[in-house]
Length: 163
Image (cartoon, rainbow, N blue to C red):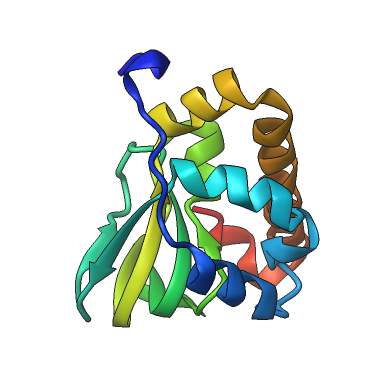
């Protein structure tokens, strides 16, 4: 989808912004983006409400979507030759999908809804439009996601959970 075919839309993202600000995990994205940039980014996000059990991302997918968790919890699991390995529970204010966002390669784990949740999606087309219309904000987001990725990679227990 060409970048010009995406249209930014205004949504009420106050609950998402509050969740991001209250996430105190070391890999939280709140430390890297100020409220002014978030107000621009939020125009490029699409909200959805997902029920418990919904498969948000399947291991092997190539979609490149990025998700921000407003409420609820996501469960991250990986199929291995030895069986299913539980990697993490991600709560409000978390971001997931950063590996596929940057590489567009296959997801290395699956993410399902552990508790009913609201997630906000940034598609590759929406990011391209953000990049076209607000390059400094898109660069700041990319740097923030890079910091999340690096933080997760430094934590040996989460190295395989970079999605």
